[in-house]
Length: 441
Image (tube, rainbow, N blue to C red; front, side):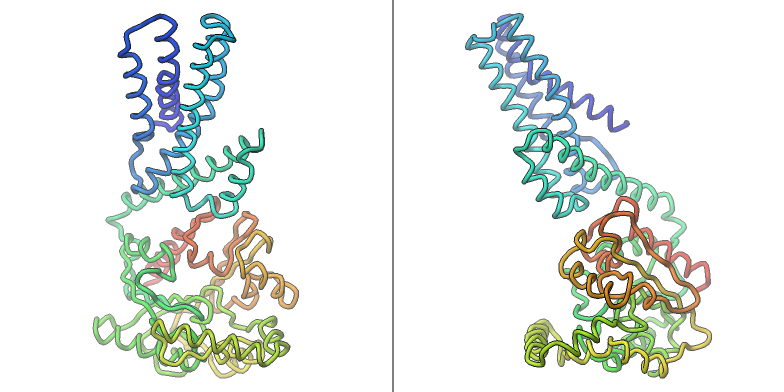
């Protein structure tokens, strides 16, 4: 059933629940009509959608969007109904008329709040900004309607995207498009860990596994120099190969994880265990603004930040975090020396991905701030890494979105679990891994 039909039916049922008390009073009908009104209202608010192919969370969001669309339609229908009852039945100044107005107002209010709470609590695509705008404009006439339409549009966009994803995955399930010859190892970037409860890669791993991928994680510490991190990555790769007998792995690495992986392959003997390396927004040629900050920031400030970071990440499992060493290895001068030493290994497929933020103030803190610095020193960037620095290997894929925030350093790994209307990041990774499978990796 088309959604506009669902919303139309929901609107008519809610309208019936709204007008039954007034009609009953005007025509002195059976008191059971009041009971029918209450039942209709409760059913519509508890079960505002019957959409399939959705998770429980998105069914709640879909119900909320439907209720809000019905609310907008009811505004018009109820205004007409209230005017007619005032003119034809009760009189504009009668107690019965104002009782009817109160009933209509309460029903409208309950439908609105049920809908808005549902989408505020479940829709990721609305984002923080539109949630705040919705609250600020809630009491401003006209503006509140415009913002409400926008909120509904964003929620429905997310719902429709998820429905298409569910149907698509079901249709291609037997094809196992992500079942590569060798398993995938996901290698995180600097200042993060592979945590079980908060996956660094957002919803991407689940999507890959649904399509047949076998996944492992790098599990290196959050902040070490490239050489030290690379040792941990190399050991992890060797352990996976030995325990599973898979012979080789395909690496997908984000940010500094790409440099760690290159070093492990070229300098630590991991090359014989690696079929391909895909780097995602990796600063292969370093970050000019990072070098500038390190050179100009007071030593006391640098040491203070490093000390606090190292202490914090020691508590979550790092044995010997080294904030300053990790950052220093990302400077342009450091990466120039790195690239002179670390050469690509023949026979291994290298490719890369890059992106950029469109408008700094539309992105999230602190990437909006660092984007301005990187843009001044380096050029178009994702908040940390420039597009030019991310290019490496035989193939480069430029990820873009027309959304004001573009595609940030966090967006490329779905860190915020936030969809964009014109970029399905999870499906991008399905395509990326599917391409590795096609290439025989």
